[in-house]
Length: 323
Image 1 (cartoon, one colour):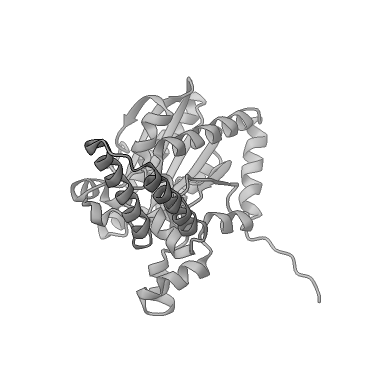
Image 2: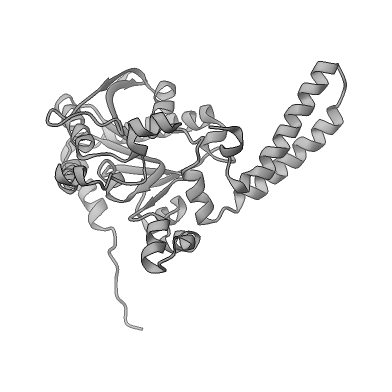
């Protein structure tokens, strides 16, 4: 991926300024010259520009950030958050699906099961990972891991980042909708704590199939929706260029979904997005995982299941009042 294509259009003024600062600093070091005053001015300007750009993002810009080519994926987070990760493959029925990564690991010496979508960084990787769009065998592999977690009393931590489940003929022939529905049912009654992070795109049932949890958290610049903005625009306006308008109408951003009660917490990202400081983002996630697992571990299983059930039953509930 070339440098010129790895940044979004609205980021370019900031990226160009940051490169200018890097070039000036490198030139000063090479020539043993003093440019400290100029560097301070440029860095102040960059800080102001960074704040201006990222403090007033539109819903469509958040969609773009959720899809950012540099955004961290599951395999970027695993070595920073977990130890002794052992990836397990296959659904014991058809085959393996590289769009979903599953395995056992330790989080601060506690055994856990990790499940998540995985996209690619280049054409070869994206073909292998099917652009993060799972087939039914991917969801069945995830379910196998959930049952393994339940058998051994290990919490399940999922990382959601997919445009949606793969809609191809082969996937449908192998039972895509049944696989997703089965996961929804089984996750709703899984007898271990389940912690869900929406870290990028949360696309429709393809996301929901590993996102039924006791706690659902969204990164600040992630999105979660029943349909993509482009798909919505194509249906409502017969024009995919209306995606920015549909992104606003769908209310797919983290803060909007928190206000609606769909998710439990908005996880702040470094200014500019998770891709600008992976280590800081990982440490923020570490704190969230530690705190939520500690709370969930103290809840008896029967109570945990009832709370999970009520959490989803109350979504969309409303009261009518006479004016």
